[in-house]
Image (tube, rainbow, N blue to C red; front, side, top):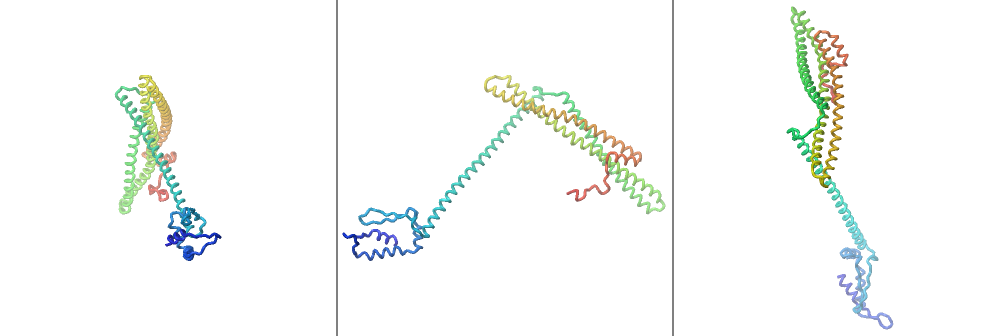
Length: 375
């Protein structure tokens, strides 16, 4: 309805006389009514018109007569009203959201590309690691098979190899000593527990048998004394076993681990040495020379590693021998004095032996640590 009225008002022709005054026509009343009706639109209708339009910033109002061609363009920015403000804010919000969406999309794309590049770099690094490991394993396996079948040469340090064999043989013997000492400890512990139970039984019979009170009495005292001396000897033997266990399973084992690393480095060194010798016997073109240079670099790296581990083994074997002599001298003296004093019945000498080696016995019932020590 509004469109038809505005169209009618816009297409009406207003005649002008020679004096420039408007003439009186019968349509003046209808024109005035149309203008009044047009500007009587309430604020709500104007808002609906502004919102439903395609874009208020591009809206134009055209006026002219039947014969006129001129158009009057009125910018809607000059029109004040809730509808105009709503449309402007709506367009501004749409543009800001569009920019934010584009920025979010671009940042997401860049972050996804960065993550993809990082994962690709990790994958390439893993592939290179596996490739190097496979090549190194192949060369070492080839060298090991060649040595076993007597076709390949190996680097040998006769003096160091002899020391390593002595260490391995010594470790086996010390392990046997440790096993026997533990067996002695277990058997002696059972004997002490039996003596303790036997002493309690003799003491009980001494109270219940008046006619044999004296005999049961001094036998009970003897078993209690033996039990006490046996617990003292168990403390010395347990200290001996603990020290031997540390020497065998920690000190010697650490040296043997270094020896294993040294032997692996020796195998790798010989593998790359053999590879370099084979390449040196081949043709000397550009490709072959590049491969020889790469093999020479790898050979030098393996040689440095081999010599470093060889030096570590020599130093560890030297300190191990000194430590072994010192520890075993002390432990063997302790074991001898404790066993001799126990079987000689010399309680004072047995206690003096424990004081000499700073051995403290745990009181009965102290085998299990307290709840504070367990925390």
